[in-house]
Image 1 (spheres, one colour):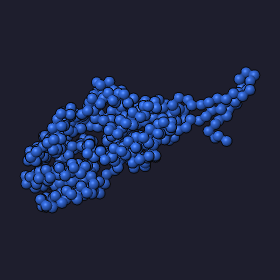
Image 2 (cartoon, helix red, strand yellow):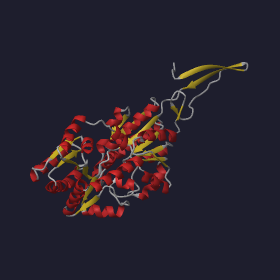
Image 3 (cartoon, one colour):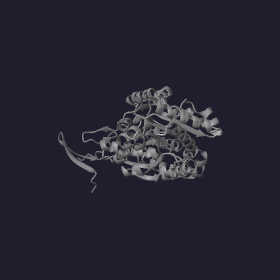
Length: 429
């Protein structure tokens, strides 16, 4: 007996018709997510989509956060997150194998649509294969074509039906280049709003302020090469800042245990006497407790914006990479907060060659924030204004609404989302 069929009698005139309605299978969205941060944001998006319709199904490539929220993970892509050609080449065969896995799902009719999140090098292939089978393709946290690689916009128009922009300036760029898109807001602000803070730790750190100590966050990056290149400059600038202001105390927010150990070794070797504490997995508490921060350029600038804390931003690169970036990169800032504002709120510097200019930059920038109250408060005011305009939570909910609308999944009376009507009828004499 097929329990998916609902038989209803319908009297029409003198005849009798038996109508058999086949219930549509739950709609399934294929997800392709490559970065750990994308996995976290997409996990929240899945949760929001399921709030609208618990019957929706999700499968694809992602990570533990997506799995926790009910997505069937065909392969954990977050374990393969890579940067640069040297890291990509050894994994090319595996990437193509996974693209084949996705295409087989598309061919089988097992999914109704595709959502790509970050990871453009791989996701271009997923989009191309999905379009072969007429599947709608949407992009969330899209590639930053506005920063570099703008010529790829033609590829985006060919293979993606709609983009959910997370930055206002990103939306304007896509509008100018005739890419269908909707501004939804950055999911990072939802993550900050939802994250519970360790009150005991904040209380301990708050005691420092009552003793007149000045807390400065030190955020050396989330990747090994970022930490190894930038922390030595940060360490020397810390030493110079304390020489000018002995009440300053530094809170290093490390992304991983290995980073904290590496940084602690550098401290012991060169500046053991500095007042430095190390924290792993407590970056939010470190930012919340500090007056200001020195940071390696990255998405953590958005959390500083959300928590209203100014920062000095540095990024150290080699000469060859710097020369290449000058040719390819089309934006004037390395900091998302400054790009969002259209002006420099966070002082920033790309460090190339001799480390001394970078050390001087960090020393002078942090010293100015600590010593010049008028300057510090002007930064706070600018951050508050930007946060009110572009830094509020709600991006996840908006993204869910836009995705459901663009997919053509409309809410029925029972709260379920349907694509058209999938039903068959049989007539009996």
